[in-house]
Image (cartoon, rainbow, N blue to C red):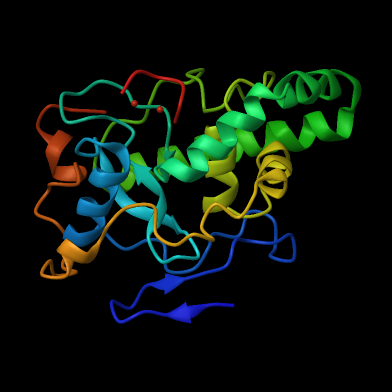
Length: 230
């Protein structure tokens, strides 16, 4: 169930398959606020690079996926549009990766034409959304042929990236959905970071501290979750 928060954003249960595939989760296009940026910094253990919006909120109310600009302030490409920030979710996904799930997915991809088509559609959705984000930020799109995320469309390389895509755009990523369904309730113990000292921060958009459009406009350009060095 959705719960309206004082900042106007929404704390939601995890998405389910009932939503129209590819339908963006509600209340996800707001600029990253100062409070959100501070939360993400605590989650990552460093200031977020290129993060401009909350793409999904954990049921606890904190961001767990952020949308990043396609180019970083220095101009380098940043292919991963949707970046998983919650350390508990990341740890649980790492356990799935260690279980051999990706190898099994890769094998199925070679045998199931319908699954391969849906995975390719997820790849195309990712590229289209990344290009749209670049256009909205006044940045040059990334070169054609550059990777999307997670190994799409022909490989399964990073479940963190695939789950982040599925959380941000419910119903679009078949392997992201499978991994998400296999995860424990990582939010059950409450927020993953201490937010009690952040109460004084307002919920106004940050002053480019989130690495948004204006950061890279003069330099020209910006890069991807779990695949590229951060």
